[in-house]
Image 1 (spheres, rainbow, N blue to C red):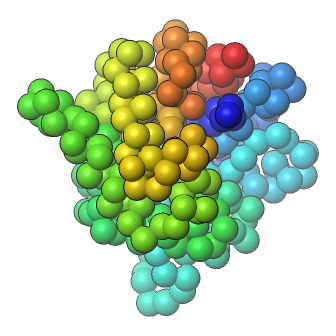
Image 2 (image 1 turned 135 degrees about the vertical axis):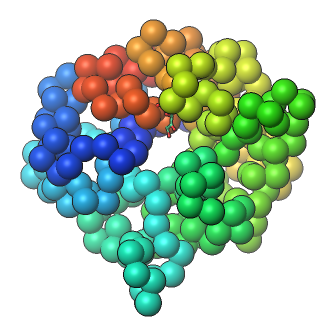
Length: 257
Ligand code: 13P
């Protein structure tokens, strides 16, 4: 079964809503129908730009998906500063990053918190992008696969097979994020395959075949085609290069197989 690649641009804490509109307009200009036919292309702006970008996508019928970088697991309540899944749904957000390594390292998102977010996002009818990945030290110690396996298992705890099949896992080795160091295509392929194997153990082969596993970490125009050409790599979660419309468009084009 063939999986549609998912190319997502995580803008992190960059771009106000006016800059966001300009970037999406440039991106729409740079993409051709063959690009958006071949892959699901998603932009993941900061919360403050979601409404502007959503309105632009809707108004101009742009073939782009919209994602959020995080959310709370409760639907509403006394959680000052937090954003709930139903609020995102109202803005036509369809993907939510859960457990990005920056959230885990800087904001205390534990595996348990990440799991609550994954379940809340699914319950709201959106698609979680469950982010997993090992640190440099963990890789050096030979623990990369074990760490990622633990994160995948914990992230999917309590998620039924039908919902699990719809989700996306992003394998993002921490040492490759924002560093210019990329996993080799062989390593990325092997780790994405390992994630799929864990999903197969948790559920069954059918779910594992359907789940999309992206690679993230210094994906650039120059390395995208090689990474995306690997059978286990179903797309890319792009940070820095997604802030440049032309660079991101080149990466999207690399998903045409
Ligand atoms: P870079 O592409 O800047 O390395 O960031 C990757 C990332 O964290 C995407 O979520």
